[in-house]
Image (cartoon, rainbow, N blue to C red; front, side, top):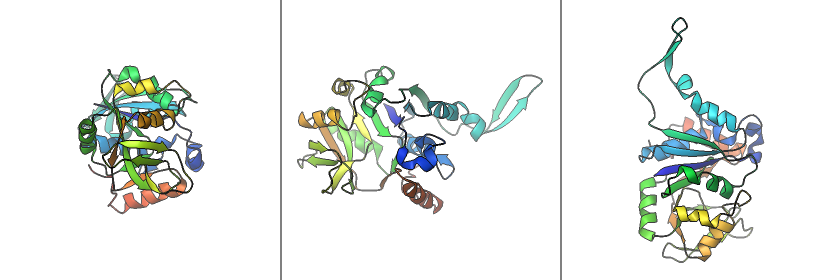
Length: 256
């Protein structure tokens, strides 16, 4: 099963960092938050990734193209025109980096990478949020519920969108960013069937609006409730809090 990561947004609420680089490359503990997210999936045995790039896409491509140079010792033989890397591979990842457009919305980005998913069930998450989520349990729940989509539902303040469930694990309503409610919200970490592409019209479609709302209305959106650690990196304050947790040696999302 492949993992799709949305990494194309402008990250305007973290402009202190994102003026210079895309948000997924903003570092926590010397590593991009994108790397942390991928490590969470890899710890569960998922090593094939499709990264939906957009804003400063070339920087994300360069990060992976130069991964060995940045993370390994090496010997450069200028006479022989060779480059040798030393040490065992640190990761077993296969990463496809797809430029899904500068202004494409989240749903449009997902639809643009459909051809790389081989018509199979796939995972999807955002490139700026970490959690101590049990990925295998999430996927098992998706298979059990037999719905087209499963969203991870996490507790959060009312500034986020609220999921309304019926007690059996099926989402009845999806309401984006209510101002006067607190409930379980969209925490990313989706599992999706390829039929979800039928709910996405094109580049201008925000996945969090029409597709999720229509899936909920059709009874095709299941909820996997996660009550453990979950944190998006929306602001500089969020980044500093994640950095503090990492430096403490007790980062909850470090499940590897």
